[in-house]
Amino acid sequence: MLLESGFAHIAQALLWPVLILVALGFVYALWSAGATLMEAVQRRRPGYRLLKVQAGSSLETLELQVVRSLEAPRLLGRVAPLLGLIATMVPLGPALQSVAAGQGQQALAVFSSAFSGVVLALAAAAIALVVYSIRRRWLLAELLAIKTEQGWT
View 1 (cartoon, rainbow, N blue to C red):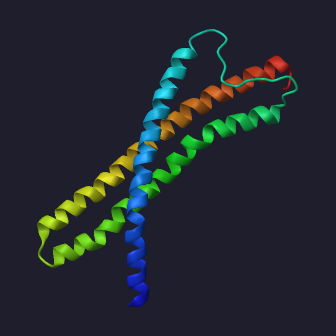
View 2 (view 1 turned 180 degrees about the vertical axis):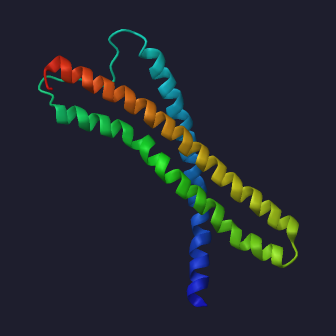
View 3 (view 1 turned 30 degrees about the vertical axis):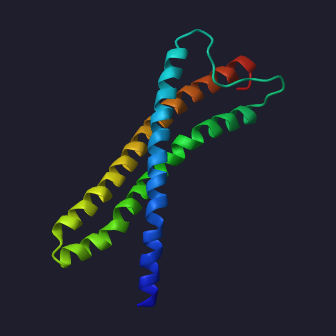
């Protein structure tokens, strides 16, 4: 009983940090979508490149640049659903206890907040995965063009 009670307290303590991370992830996803749209407009200009080739740059350096620039949306796309699951599961225990005690209205309020957390997390993940896919395609095309220009094939 002590172990179960301890787990319940730890899970409840995780709720607010998880909700804050979900909110930050959603804001970042919206920001990165806007930045990607701006980059799409900039890419219409001839000669625009995100990858910067310095004197003495190697192929590995440019590949590392690509990986670094894609890491945040990739990570958000994978982690946000997990955070959403935590944001949903933690409040369900007390909500089910409220239902068992005959307090349906109180349980309903908890259910709605629990599900809004997962909706925001899934939306953030979906946006991040779209941003990741678009930016990955752009960066790989740039990398291929640079490889051809530099004769690194």
